[in-house]
Amino acid sequence: MKAYLGLYTARLETPARSLKEKRALIKPALERLKARFPVSAARLYGLDAWGYEVVGFSLLGNDPAWVEQTLREAARFLAQNGAFQVALEEFRLEAFELDGLL
Image (cartoon, rainbow, N blue to C red):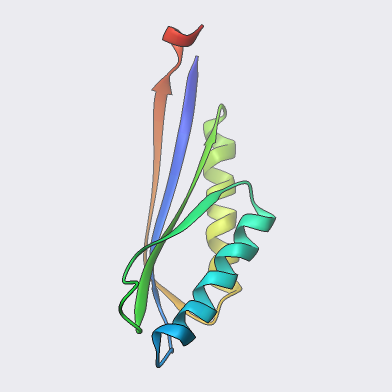
């Protein structure tokens, strides 16, 4: 039996002119994402830069098609519901054997 871990990371370009303004754009977008999709999300890099930030979210499940589809829907939601532009993005899907736990 396998478990599948999906990981999405993105560089978000913001029109913010301060760190406070950027946080006010990014943080609520991630909270809306977590409320709508079963993902864990975090701000990863660029926390001290006002023009961009790298964010990521992950999802664990037993069906690789569901994990990938959910991540892609969540990525579209993030891109369409924020006052920022997705400059770069990356999807990963890893499989893990669970045989030792059975």
